[in-house]
Amino acid sequence: MKHAAIDCLSSFQNSLSLNRSKHLLILGTGIAGLYLVGQIYVSYKKAQRRKKWASVEKNMVILHQFERGKFTPNVSPFPLKLETYLRMTGIPYENEFEEPMGPKGKTPWITLNGDEIADSQLCMELLARKFHKDCSSHLSPEEQAIARSFHIMAEEHLYWGLLLWRWVYTKGRTLWQVQCNLPKSLSLMLPLVVKKLKGQAQGQGMGLHTEAEVIEMSVKDLRAISSFLGTKQFLMGDKAIEADCAVFGILSQLLWNCPGSPFEQLLNGEFNNLKAYCERMKDTFWPDWDRCLNPARI
Image 1 (cartoon, rainbow, N blue to C red):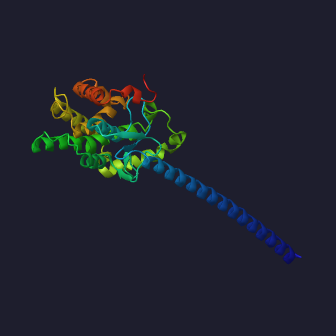
Image 2 (cartoon, rainbow, N blue to C red):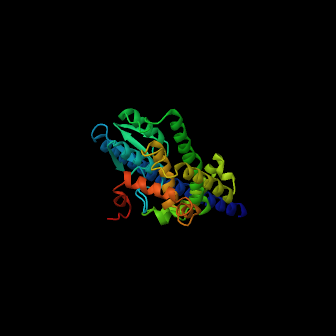
């Protein structure tokens, strides 16, 4: 009797185990099927977009970037830099906002005659060769070296002060003040995004310092740019050059997209010549600036 009861219980447990395995298999198959359908749809949409981009006229640049911001045409300095360059040089282009992240997982990127090119600086250098554009040709080698030094300082040092303020010190919360139509999922993913960007900043080196130290370093960069600019119209004189696009891209974020930051206060105070410089770049290359915001100011 006892053995029969044990056998019965064992059979019941095996039956439950088999049913559970069966249900898990069905569930797993369903999830895999949904994922496969999703990937097929994504691939289809991607192919359709590329077919559309290939249909534009020859030598038309397709500029892929984030959607427009509330106070600047882009809340990232690099798309703003590249679009300013396109306007400065008169190279024909169209904007595309559906696929902002490029082959290297960065924004912006461009499509030109079917080729995909990533990284704002590499895009500018390729376009300069393709369309024979050189906005710095009037400068001496020494002046070009100085311009490059300010360009690199802005993008490879001051930029990290911007990134740390926006994503680490304020935990990304100010993003909602400067950008409309952010996906709801971003608020759920924000801790992961902050952690990832903090890790990048630590890998670069700036993220290893205290907030006070980073702010001090960034202020020194701003003071250097302000002192060098002085009363000049643009970085190297009366004519804007490629380096102005990079410097403007960073400064515009600090001025208009870092609400409540010490950068915003300094650009409206001690370094007000940098604010005037940003306004000048905006007026010169972005006469339609207000229409390039979201919502547009018409």
